[in-house]
Length: 114
Length: 112
Length: 224
Image (cartoon, rainbow over all chains, first blue to last red; front, side, top):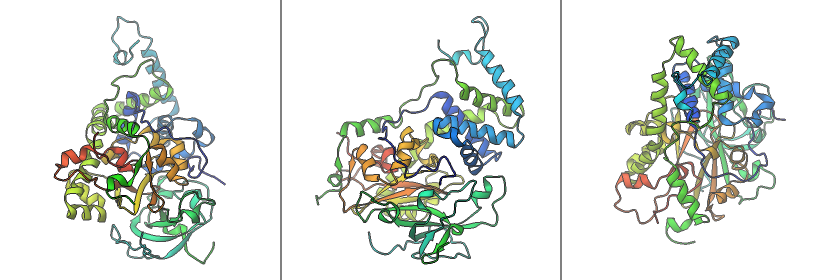
């Protein structure tokens, strides 16, 4: 009778992929951002864990950094750091940067090697 | 591994702690909703207090923005794997240990 | 029972284990290929919103990234190497992990540390079944396998089978002691020091204390 989707100890599962596949750049940055948010005492480990657990049925289909990013989003909105609308607007703004023509400098352009 | 579970406490034990190192305890079989740090697989299992970790704000409350006070005593509890898993494939001397908060523990012999 | 601690554990996949050691501190990609996905955009957006509010700065995030990449991963091996050469330090480490790490400049912040020692009778292995708790200030970021469902689910109920997948085989009379890092403590395994390392410097000893040995899925071995 499992109430927490992350409570998986003891469940049958397949072989462990014993190779460490490391972290992508955005994951390292997302991890550092999450760490800074905790250091600033905006939130704590326990709140972030709880927010991840509240992903419920979606949890099992998400990758680790998708889960942690979703948890940070949930908690920061709960605490009034920004609204869902503000977040969506900022995300749209960032997406638009990738449509910037080649002759105009974009801070993110160098991060995307086509 | 020697029969005694006694190891010195790593940190200053809470001034009032219900259990001492070596006590036999059972993890409650409750299934409350919300944030818990007691895995399902260990609920209802019997083990032994391995050490007293100290007193900490309750994570079940910290998770919702409360201050978690008064602090709760945290123990490390040792279990034989054969007491945790039916049909455990390894030898009888294998063990598993984890941290369990005092409010999740009863003395062995008292079920809740 | 065979003699030396090094022979104590059979090795099933030496090459694979060797690769693990080299992969520990491999350089990470500075940039990702392809356009950012939804969650990358979400994380960047959240960071920029907090920067605009003056709550955090980009430099703080960058500095944190650098700590995770350039400092944290090395502390664990350094601490255990010190424990190997200095028995009094080892006792302090086993008694109060956080204080002992602080002696060496490895600050664990809010985390508590429990160091668990491998002996000829006991082999320790660490997991966090509920999420991915890990002594990041000592080992850096956890490897992908540590965060994986398969490791988290299985190592608590079939640890010997999981260890075998890492090439670590233990005789039945060695107790496998699994630690589920489920609350406020973090864990570091202190492996047995292999024979043939007598007189080694701490730096050289730290070189064989890979991340995998400090989580307990492998044991240290001398370079081929």
